[in-house]
Length: 136
Image (cartoon, rainbow, N blue to C red; front, side):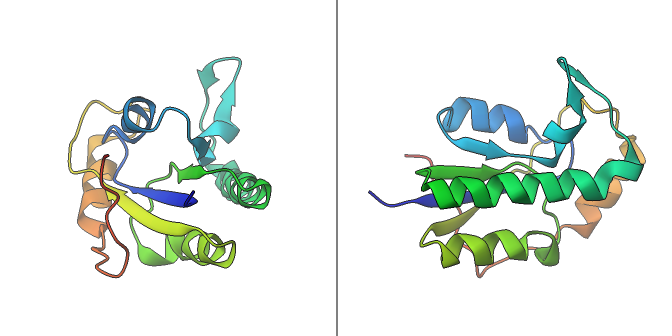
């Protein structure tokens, strides 16, 4: 069986987490957002963003070391340098690495202001070097 990594790529409010729940519900999901969740409540603290991403990366590498069949990185990953380490680690551990770009926009659940979401959309970098994950 082929081991796969999916790098989610889309601004806040694009439905990344919902897409994962619907299309790959058995995947191991790694997300910086998990760091901000306590007892079912999401409390974002920008001062802890670095720790949140460190926690996500740690969980990601742990999943690869275990050999989990499908691992998803559920962050915005708008700019190549933000997800390059995930791509490199995935390949190092023998995974096929894909991206899943969402162009949809819903009401975001994390209270990100509309102007910030628009800045995210504007900063999105297309990546033709990473294949798009196709629903089976």
